[in-house]
Length: 244
Image (cartoon, rainbow, N blue to C red; front, side, top):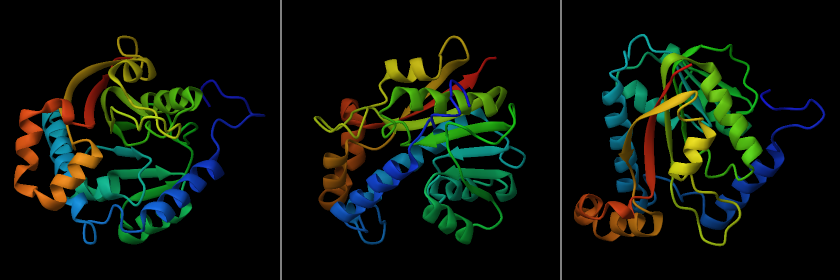
């Protein structure tokens, strides 16, 4: 475990699981449901578009690439990759929430899903052609944990392989459960210039209150606002390349 101590675990799984239970208890089970919540649709389309543009930019071989999704949840991002032609048996996902991993396994038994800690991965170094994470670092407010997770992502990625890091660049003011992945923080966590380099960035969903409102009530204006007011983009997908 990078920077770890066998007597002091690098992560607190119960704390994170408690946070998710409270989140859905407060916001409702349909908070992020495409079928039940109209506010999710265009936010999801914007995120999918950013991911697809990022994949096009690195010209990855979809049929042979070994891919790891860190913090995969129920496997939604890997489902997108399968739609794009990636081989399911080459796709791997890890998450600390057992229930979400069980759902991911049931929905896509051809891929490999494991309940595991992002800060101490079981994979050998130089294993994956691409390692990705979405909305992981916004929740890792402890920089020791965040640095360990980023270091592990770099370690398991092949030299000259790619990392796709999709996250929120703004946090919720006054809420200590969130820490924005600003350009400065991303550069520090992923040791840009030493172990990785930034290839390109792609704008994804708008800041949630606005994006969800437009998606629900003014859907035709969503991508017009997205194009004309880039500072309202809340979620950014960054493509990095491992240079070790």
